[in-house]
View 1 (cartoon, rainbow, N blue to C red):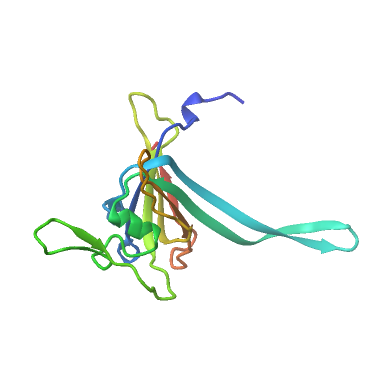
View 2 (cartoon, rainbow, N blue to C red):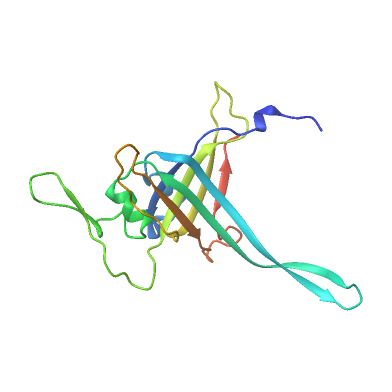
Length: 191
């Protein structure tokens, strides 16, 4: 098999977030809020849980089935804005519910956090990076769209003298059953 070096993908990705209810079309999702810079890129993982179906005659698995799957997205936010902190802590970071502009004439914002309901806030995500076939003169995109993401990772905000204030964000991707055949999302390459 011949190697096509243009299929080797190198480069960072960006992440956008929007309200899950507004994730009706890809065009609507492309206009979501850009979260700003990330550190060490974005990681999307697909973690299947396989089960052996064993029978006595084989002494081994006669068949293997997938019993469940877990899809996650992880990144580190390099811009420590209140909206990004609200996103990491699973609050409404795209609306005006939890991060509000103060009417104090001092151009300030407040992140309101407290007891949450038992149902986590769902967001939609768009992750854009480079697609295979990208060359110095022709940038092609790979986009990952998902309509149901909730922040699941423990995270902390640190403020240190000689380091940037960054925080990790980890999302669990949940299926949208109405999207038959692409319940977890879509990955679209520009060719």
